Amino acid sequence: SAYIRRPMNAFMLFSKNHRAEVHQKYPNQDNRTVSKILGEWWYALCNDDKQRYHD
Image (cartoon, helix red, strand yellow):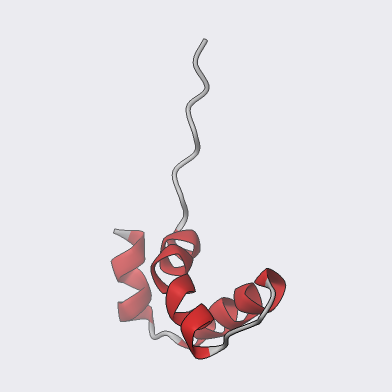
């Protein structure tokens, strides 16, 4: 049977869309730091902005 990948959750979609921007603003950061920054950005979003990634 073929393996079906689980769909990305809202935060993963947000991260995919903003990871390059974080790398540009904060060059030479490791992936752990970039992920932490993305988490902070996600937490700071209002619910309406987060809803775009849930739809």
